[in-house]
Length: 174
Image (cartoon, rainbow, N blue to C red; front, side, top):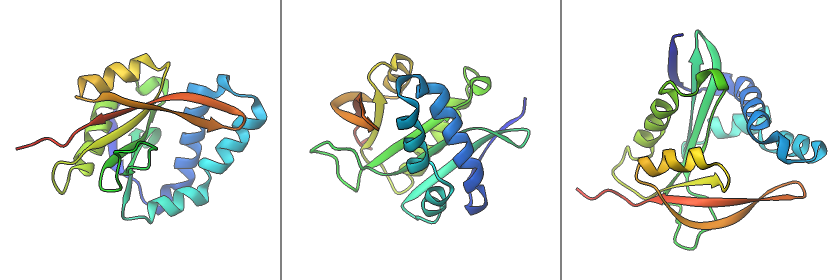
């Protein structure tokens, strides 16, 4: 396998829509009634939505590809989490998803490092991540990178409210 990470461009909106829907469904689809899941996917992962994100200078998206085929992605931008201390100046890793064939080989770490470097391109700042409360593997991964739990909230997917944890890493001081 020959994995590469590249910054997504407007022409990748359809690919991002497909990979986002696929990875979200494979990871969490079993948690929701089908009608709620399908509505969530259409609302949050449409081609048009990805086009808007890809035109937003305050946001960045990367694709992980294996021989030219998308097997994962990451999205970063200004923090939008509902935590009292979070500000728009803080950064947020909004999404990082990989298909099963791209997991456990270091690709997730490389994709994460790419997003972190972009978030800190103008200097250190506080970075936030939202993690499903039962995703213990992701919580351990982020803890290894210096993130710690800062709060909790409910993430709506239709009628279901997921229990989410907010993790934060304060700006590194020189």
